[in-house]
Image (cartoon, rainbow, N blue to C red; front, side, top):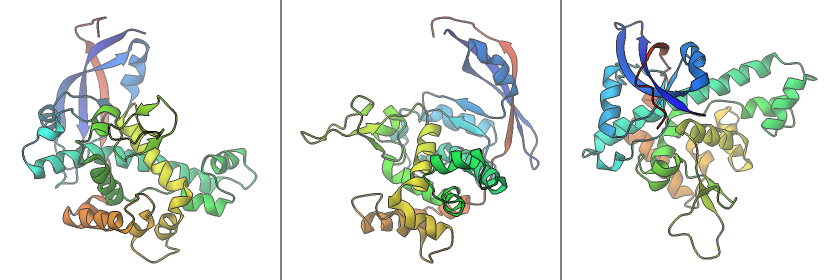
Amino acid sequence: MKKRWFTLILVLSIATVCQVHFEYTVHFEETGTKAAEEAQSAEVEFESWQEVDRFFKTVGYDLEKGIVPRVFLKSLPSNMSEIPEVGKKKELFIKILLPIILEVNEEIEKERQEITTLSDNSQKLLHYMKKYRANSKEELLEKVQPIPVEIAIAQAAIESAWGTSRFAIEGNNIFGEWTFTPGSGIVPRERPDGEMYEVRAFDSLLDSVRSYAYNLNVSSFYSEFRKIRSGKLHKPIEEGLLYYSERRYEYVNEVKIIISKNNLKSYSTLGLSSVRIALIKNHNLTDNY
């Protein structure tokens, strides 16, 4: 199906500041323009970190003021490693990931709220129990919970080297997930002879975060993580990630250090601001994209 370019205007509605208007180009499939008009969020792409930085400034994205627009980058800019200042690199990485993490947590919370209303013999409840591999509604509710924001950012930072790794740039994989299906991922250059694993490739950063959250909420390796999160075990939640890496306690300690050093818990109370998308006119319609 042919894709065409449209010029869009986004209106960032934030109670504490004036409305911000800006224009940019983004592509939608030819039959998807109505969906674009009705959408409440935007997925965008940029070539460079400089463009991303300017875009965030234009929409008034300000972490200090707690303003997190509902705008999701499809992929990381390919030149993340060229950001000269470490502090700037970390800030931009967090700004890119935070809306996506909050969006996925909203999706999980919606499922959780629906589950609480379902009767025990509901087909919908059975669907969720199968999806999350739960044997009871109690176990299901323990599994279907948002991922702590500081945990997600810290792990993404470690696994993707703050958004600069080959797998993050080429495959939108920011949590180091593997696949054992040949040809479905990216083969690590240093993979030992005889090994079959590949690093998973995702269509978008949003898909990567969804997969990561599902993994933490379902895998038996993280049952302790879920019990800590539910308040059934009283210990630092980072210790529930012991089996996420072969480095074990060294990895857990690194997660703790990154959370503390970068004050990541300060983002745990933030929510997404509303963004409205309105198609105003088509621009430079081309078929060679």
